Image 1 (cartoon, rainbow, N blue to C red):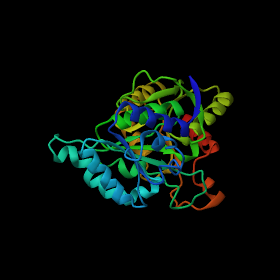
Image 2: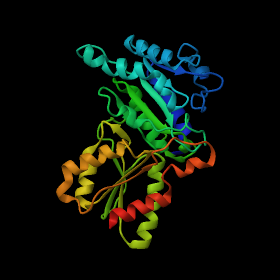
Image 3: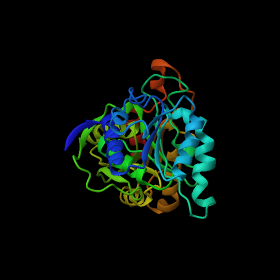
Image 4: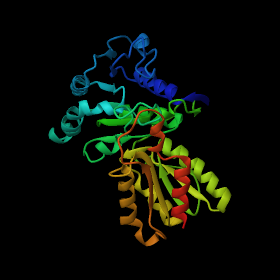
Length: 326
């Protein structure tokens, strides 16, 4: 095992897949000497050359469509948007073209593109550089959405996304890029995107489902509540949002009888509402109380320190847990 950051895990996953498959290529802005906006592509162009690590101008719509064409030509493109917010400029290529290729071709063609979206707050970057985008795409058939949190899961599920034959959005949170953790020196098996949910902490009184920074804050809040109340809280990291591992959540809720879902995206229309609806539809008899959502404020994101009031803190998570336990 080696200790590494999320940023290093992202770089390692791409390196390993480019070694394993010469058809894996990287597409984006400033991927060469700069190593991408966040440094996650550092060293890849030097190692694999300019024909596999391609630098494009600031033209998201153009390189999105280029990647779809490359995928149809037998390549496996990795496409980085500097900020997830800018994926709006590639929306047509992702939603109207990539997502529909398998269906429209009668299953003859596939579109194995991985769209990499660094999202969320933490950088005090304001309205156009801090949004959470997973719910924008969750309603689009034909797309997969991968959202791991820890360095080990980032490495494993990034590789899984690259290998998948369908267009996949790989979403990570910029605020956690410095998060460190143990990562296996060798990944014995690249995981499947199906049944990806993981119980990161066992408990008997409440089920919490959270991802990205919300997961980290929920874990901190759960520790405080357990110490103060004696209750135990089970926490699930879904790791993959589409396809979602429903059964691991259902089994947990049937045991605990209570549910809280948490994410940093705005509450209105957030993916947490989808999780909650699945649970209510399938576990209504086992629920002892109404499920609780803890999410971002339904507001435009301001610059500077004001952004901290829009995202759920440890204190917000604690309040949500206590409400769910009533």
